[in-house]
Length: 496
Image (cartoon, rainbow, N blue to C red; front, side):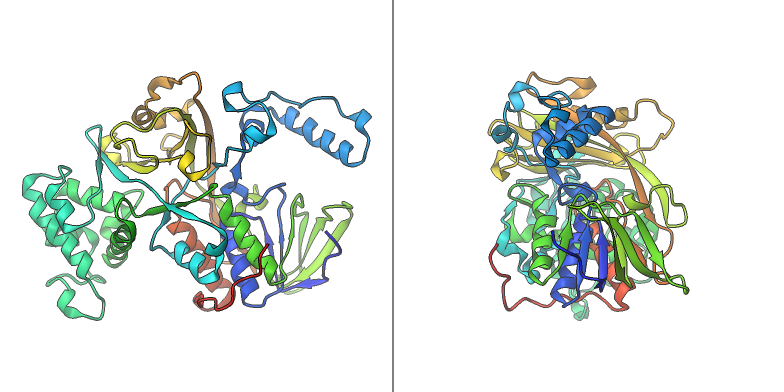
């Protein structure tokens, strides 16, 4: 890393997916972008880690991690006498590898999420040319759990006929609903439903107009519209209908499920958007924590202070706009507010999930009504097919919103998910493992238009990226004052 330019159009703090998408977009628009990150790797909370990195994050103590950092600094300064031999903490167990080349076969996503095949993020990937440098594979299945049994989510009229997910009497009504979804065109009134106004009728009323019962409405809203709770029911039907249309169109792209996932894991996404930004002259600096934001007499941001990643000398760059992820403002109640907690378990399995036809990958939603909860439980599964783990292993995640913040054992809120994975009551095989993390969720207090500091939202419990791309579009509009429109790239970036 050489000297930094004195002034940048935008300084982006953090290399999470949200931040890296914006970095790539603004770079492609000709903006001068600087992106810094306190971590030694791209991705922030949306990174993919190898097995040793996972062990350091979840199994090492703070003191062991601190000693490892000190040892690395001493080695950089060529003072090997200051460093003790070996690692500062325990190595992963033998089944997960015994040397770097084996640990590097693991690409474990910290925020396991899928992409919708016809979703906003996938469209951004195609239009920016990032798909030239990343391979996206189809996910094997999309399931919803009823009475403890996973069922494939029907997305077409014919699938509704054969599905045992709904009653015989509901199949007719569901067929009509899915036919409406498949045919709907905003500018063609012949495809609209008589008596349904998407802007005045609520989604609860829409379900009633189509004759859909409570369970049918619930699995459509949670497994197709992908809402995490039922608060959407009393809001206008337009957004839920558009979400269901997106699901069905994404399903139609491949057939098995509406989801796709990157080869080598989700860490590929922020890295490739970082590369896109660099192609256009963007500057990146890892191991570079933000020290201070500077403001002018009008209270608007005018600069950022941070240590130079190599010399560690204090650097100040000028900028009039800053984008940052909320982890850089922990404890600052004037900038971020706490909006909840989620609990996520990343599990290493040696078997597929029962009831999924031995799928090598899948999303499973356990609706809240099936567990007596207020929030759904989400399960995702990927395997060696995606080059994220060695053959014979599977990576599964279970996540949900924590409903009892006073409980001493919040992992019990995942128990229904663990049972679905065959890990009920803490059972683990000899070559299996699980990493559990409680995650605080934050959102910005204000929209950033006054001081030009635009803060992103935390990643939610769902297993898809649509809320992430919504945040990208929202930040872009607040910063630029116009909607994000990405034009198809006519020239591809140069090769790495």
